[in-house]
Length: 371
Image: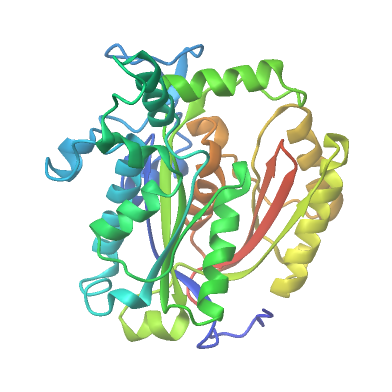
């Protein structure tokens, strides 16, 4: 989709007309925006006996208890990832205005990204099947938590969203993949609005899996603190947002993705993804005023930085580095990067890039503000 630099967006331009988040800064978009703008470190040492596995610090959503936030009804067997997604969706729908989901539930879809679903639920259920009196003596109410689409499906049921419901998994790039998938749903007119984003929970089980992958894997991944969170965006056309009284936060101008098999060629994948995304968005490199890279650190992060430096040359837009503030958010990383881009405000093109050590690179271009 090519978008010109006109003073008013075309009616069919896809816009982010609402968003919310659950992050180590707390619940809600305001808490996240305040933390990012203040560059406040949200990674903390364990307290209250929280198990962080091999890590001493982590970026946890503070004082988040599923039953305390969502109530006791329907939450007895709900895992943390699902609770974060359901709570964030509720915050977003409240901000979007009454009637979004109730007036025409079939018109609103959901695309939610995840890493593995709830790692803790998968491992707990497997353990119970092996340690119970018999292998099949498990709690059947916990089985839904072991499938990847649990969070997306439960969020739709909880908030009566009856449009297309999709779960996406793509490592650190997941949030950009979810946004792009949502855009395709809208362009093909499968629905009129989509809640899209990604969620990742922290658990001792995930901490150990990540640690072993980083210290024993082939990609020399940084062993930094982990984080958790969820970010969701309301994506719809500019005309629909205006018709319902919503002022767009940003226009979605384009996204591109590339795969690489050799980590030493990750910079080439990033460069191609960025070049193609900017071309789709009809934005020149010198027009980009903010970069939000994945900031993964280590050799892979250095290659991402090198690719961006080569593309932008003497034009050096400021970089918003989120990971060092909230930790490694796993599958939710790119979605929180997108949310961080929205906190910048103003009317300017923003480039978000993501790089996953398993061989994916992605780039998305937005123009923040309403135009």
